Length: 93
Image (tube, rainbow, N blue to C red):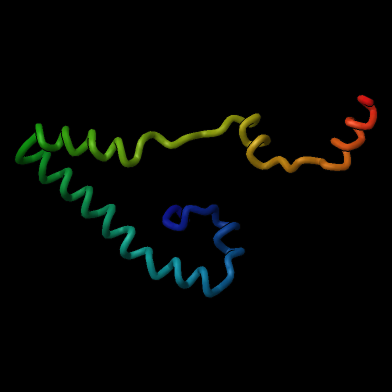
C-alpha cells in the first residue's frame, strides 16, 4: 500500500476504476525508485563525491517526512461547528 500513498483500508475503499488506474502506475513508480537506488550505488562505487552531491539533491526533492502531532491532526481534520459558533456569538452579545 506504500506505493498508493494510502493505508490498506483507504486503498480498498477506492472505486475500482481509480484503483486500476493507480495500479497501472506502480511499475513506473517502483522502476523510478530502483533506478535511483542503482544510480546511487554506482556513484558510491565509482565517484563518492558525486554520490554525496546526488544524496544532497535527493534531500531537496524528498526531505524528511512531515509528521503532525495529535493537536495538528485534530486541526487538520476538524470541521467548524457553525451552529455552535452562532450560539457563542449570540451569547457574547
